[in-house]
Length: 126
Image 1 (tube, rainbow, N blue to C red):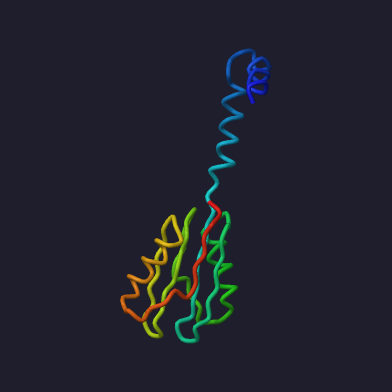
Image 2 (image 1 turned 90 degrees about the vertical axis):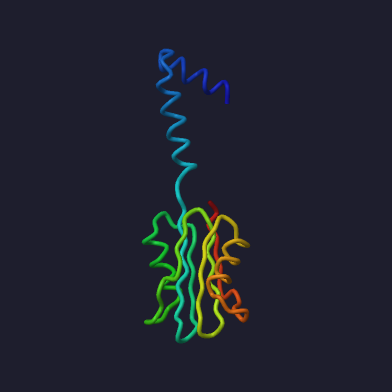
């Protein structure tokens, strides 16, 4: 890495411009957000999830398509994180967080009933 930086600095005439451009573009590649979403159908119990999409809209569309039914709706979307949906038959709760365990805990809490169970979860690769 040090040799590459030295060569870039020499090529740029010592101004550091090439180094700055190189570091900014590398940082942008690593900082790209990844989106996920979970869709469910409360009537039939169908569900679908999507993760690692470059936009929220793409993740939601993919989750709805995977759910595959007319009555499916997106319950939760997330970026660089995890999402979960909990159900007890009638009540639905959802949550998102940086970790799967915390997303599931939030979904169970939002569901509110002691009979709630995690229906589906998904995490992006971040």
